[in-house]
Amino acid sequence: MSVQMSLDARAVLPLWRRPLPLLAVGAARLLARVKPAKLRTVLEFTRRGARPASAEQALRAREDVVSVSMRCAGNNCLQRSIAAALLCRARGSWPTWCTGVRTHPFAAHAWIQVDDEPVGEPHPAGFFRPLLSVAPRAGR
Image (tube, rainbow, N blue to C red):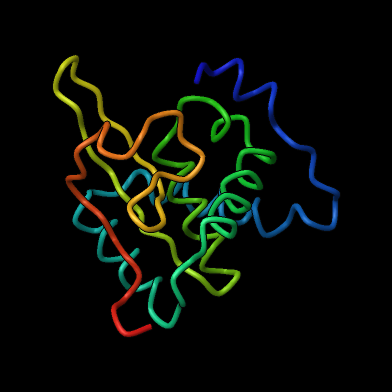
């Protein structure tokens, strides 16, 4: 999916639904700057007590984040994926947050997924090889 298509497809949230996604985007912007090990620790702590997200919940969070942030609507996949995961958590659920790579040609990417299927992504499952992921806790 091109950036332009992503920007054109952005929904407009009513004012009363914007604060929570904006908070998630702001927190994600800060978290996107920390080292991967610290980010994983923070996300593992954050997911505690959450039920696994459904595909619909994860997609809604991703769409809400994209609707309030030009950065997240563009090529900033790390901030977008963190913000969507945080927004899910604020709503009581947790998707699997992933970051990974592909080698031919080399590319890195971050995304959220539910039941091993990327949510809202133009690429199919397995397109990127996950290197780091934070799944919902077992037993929930």
